[in-house]
Length: 275
Image 1 (spheres, helix red, strand yellow):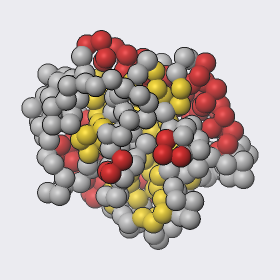
Image 2 (cartoon, rainbow, N blue to C red; image 1 turned 90 degrees about the vertical axis):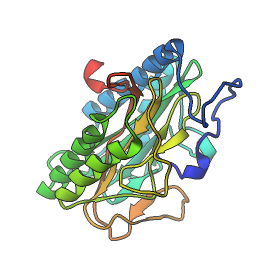
Image 3 (cartoon, helix red, strand yellow; image 1 turned 45 degrees about the vertical axis):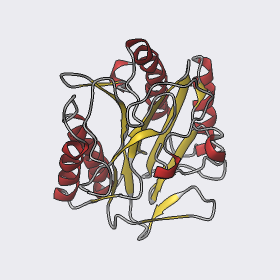
Image 4 (cartoon, rainbow, N blue to C red; image 1 turned 30 degrees about the vertical axis):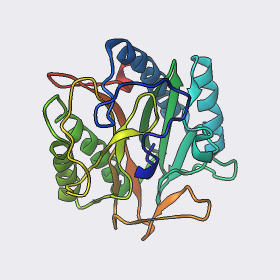
């Protein structure tokens, strides 16, 4: 889930005081094991949703399913009630970029580009991930956009290991997106994740000097999540105060994983291929 940077590090559940370094938490082995479990719940739900979604369903149907499955696995939905958000998933279709509110009035149609983002809070820690689903047969442009957005995510993840900097992730993401004729949304970024759904640092997907270029350390857990638009990178927020859309009504795609930084590389905690 993306959110404006001023919401970073605000706890979504009561949490005891914890030693922090520059506002960034380094997870202990015990905490990492819990995060593996919360992330596995998220990966399971998203994999199941990707398999069951079909034209004619509503985004409210998907939301109800996600909440049911998250609770069945012993967790609570991270998003529901977060700063007033009403759903257990964010469901954003076509030109909707992020934070789409599930609704029984929003029917999923053949050819839609559907983003489903969800989180699970389990034993004090959050997992967070997003997928983009091609509903049935989509246009060649939509198919390329989805492919490039997912490739961009992995271009960033492949750079992760202790000792590298956030710009080392951001550069390959930005380069891959632009080389394919698309744009990176800059209003929303990835983030740290753990006891809080949104923690420091902001994990950006583009080269910038306006955000801290943090050096990664083993034990950091990051939500890396490039958002890729087919047209302009700019967005606007609708009157519901949540749903962000492209300013030119172009399509948008997003992928996100919760990733653990290790001494020699990374571990994708929300890896759907392992559930």
